[in-house]
Length: 276
Image 1 (cartoon, one colour):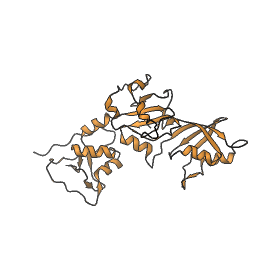
Image 2 (cartoon, one colour):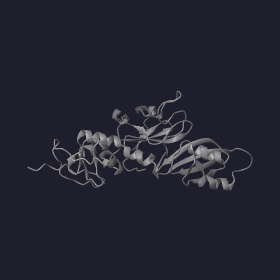
Image 3 (tube, helix red, strand yellow):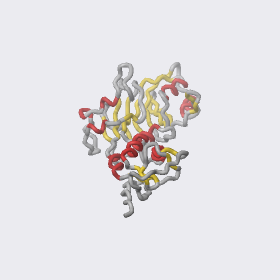
Image 4 (cartoon, one colour):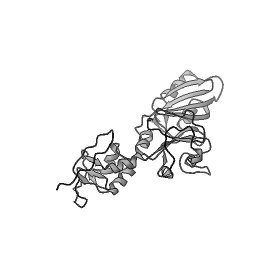
């Protein structure tokens, strides 16, 4: 009897199906190819960590054969995912936190607590409409997808889904991030039009030309920034180059997901109908 095919993965991304070989059948790996886990990541099937975990679990098939950890394959290899992996992935959550000042985005440093410590049942926003019930497993492998300085506030994203993290913080990300920035001019008069144009396009940080940004006045002492990148303390350093001091900075949107009415110090789940 021929080996049975692994069931089709229920996803909007079509995944080719091939006959799976028995677990004990030797695999002809391509020593000069690409790691299967890297191929999976490049195709948006999983994060690198997920890919390795799924391979160890026997949920990944390459050209119909069960993949092995560390295996390489040619770039055009057909990769099939067991639906059990999709079920595992579907349980992953993304959390939106309104970070207050005084918390760091990542690991604790200089006596300051990481913002993830605010993700508790007590701080779960009552206005959350996601219909997801908190479970302690939602904190497992939950990591920040981007950062906010300790003295900045606003929308901070945490996720268990490596695809979300890659979309928001990868080198090629094009996801917009919107900020409201309260500023003060270091000197007399007003910000010159030429400096406003420089903020929009023409500044460099660490020898690298910044991508064009949307910058406009919201009121007499507050600027609106829309960026498609996130270098360390980027807005503060941009402002310094044109003689502005940042007095307050708040992130109010990531992609199409706004901070909206989420109170400072509280969090909610990303809903199924929301995308960055």
